[in-house]
Length: 249
Image 1 (cartoon, rainbow, N blue to C red):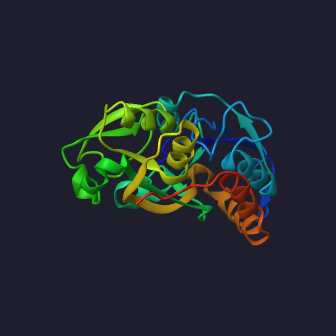
Image 2 (cartoon, rainbow, N blue to C red):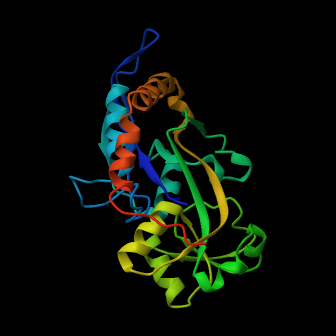
Image 3 (cartoon, rainbow, N blue to C red):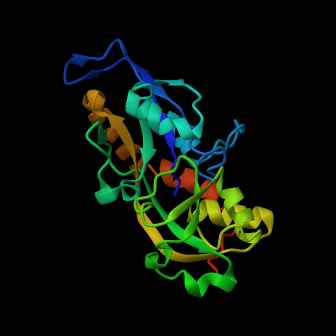
């Protein structure tokens, strides 16, 4: 699903177990897709989205100052691999064997997340299994990661909003999307869709370049605090309770 993906980095000045990270600079970019609603909402300072709100709070709790950069969605993974960016937020379920790669370490789970094969109700019976994806043209988001995309032909679009439009224009018969983004845009566009086969289910974690692994204790402690005091749940409710999302069978 959101694949994309949502990237972060920061200027850090704090202590862990007596060690000082005075000159560490981590760069970040929250720009996976231009519209990964409701996780990230661009150009909306008051309502920046679920992650748009959680990330500054999380990094502040971990005593990490953030420095924002803008990379296009298609370049964020490349920038992360090259070290131009230092961390992002992904679900291990998006990767083959849940392996984030040797360049990275991961934080504790932050938010539960899942994605589905989405289609129109008239086609839903044909997309009740991930096996139905094999050899087919499937709507996807450019720059997003899909654990089994070698099994089907990707037809990339720029956002989940465009996936919904593509289904109605019959450009693809099925697509893969996070459930909340798909249902949000279906409602906004007044274009009902069906959540068919579950494609992946997991949690968003921070994928951090391993040279910064010493920062993980503070990051994980901050995650635990925001979960235990209800902050993360309240932020999620703020965005997901504003509209009624219906699962059409």
